[in-house]
Image (cartoon, rainbow, N blue to C red):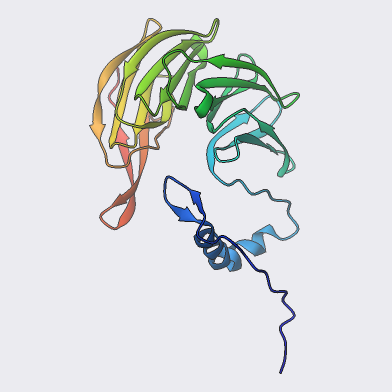
Length: 258
């Protein structure tokens, strides 16, 4: 009888839950990798890769051409060389890593540390944490967006549905507003000074910056609208929905000028 030359790999604890939010187990993740392998492996041949268990945020540090990807489960940032397309290192942030944004004024990358109720600053030149800022009134900060021109940072907290406006010149909280349940991703349109907050509870909240403060414009009901993006050229808002009926759907909204 002919024997396979492929070595046998044994796995344990296949029922272990890897991703609590969705309930996916270790066994299901392995099944996914096996099913996707024929399509993925040809593109990965002779290319270095890294496994990020729970990618949650991404920021591009233009000054050093590096990409920073938050790994929520591992509690760190994976640093990728944008020129050479390779993983460089990981940076522990001291808790679950939420969204990341690049601050063009300081050249640092900001990361929401959910379980510490803080935002940390990473210096991309040294790939080290240089500051940790506690956010008063925050409970599990996750989504972030930055108004670079006015030195404002917007932070949404999942557990208490709070939206904070922070003055980046002194890290003081300027505003604390209520939004929909479990706010997730934020998107900022610098041309129209408009902020969009996607909430897992099924809504997108809209604000406009006036005089350094946020003014509420309204909200749109969209099921599972926890991811949102905005095109600063057209001002169109893009909201991918996890499922409408039986299929994922991308909603594109035309925004009204402030």
